[in-house]
Structures are given as C-alpha cells and as structure tokens.
Length: 80
Image 1 (cartoon, rainbow, N blue to C red):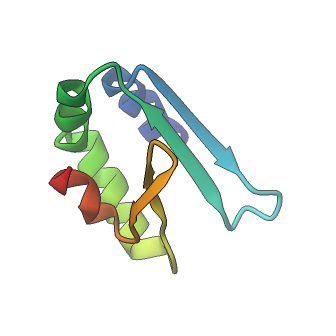
Image 2 (cartoon, rainbow, N blue to C red):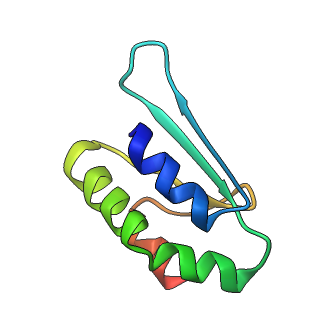
C-alpha cells in the first residue's frame, strides 16, 4: 500500500490513507484541483491497480464524492 500511495500522490492534490487500529479497514481520501485532474487520475495505471486490490481484498466499499455517497463499488469512480 505504501508504494502504491507514493505513486498515486503524483495524480492527486492531496492523498491520505488511514488504516484502522486492527488493520482491516482503510480510508483513502484523495483530493483534486479540478474535475479533469480527477478524471485523469482515475484512469491512471496506479488507480487501476488500486481498484483491482480493492475488488480482490475488500468485503465492502463506500465511495463518496464531496461527502455524498455515490456508490459502493470502486468502478463507479471511472463513471464520474
């Protein structure tokens, strides 16, 4: 996760990965300066790898945009 977060930082204005105390929950918060920057980021190789990891390893996912839930599957990000 550390190497991936370093690579993802190149595509975000701000990136925060917070791990819960038991290591079974992560909160990934990414911020972008523009919609275009966000769209480029979600189509990047690093984001595609992150999506694959989330799909393979997570039992549940919540996707929020500006604190509003927009879906529960990471693939929703590419539709924005």
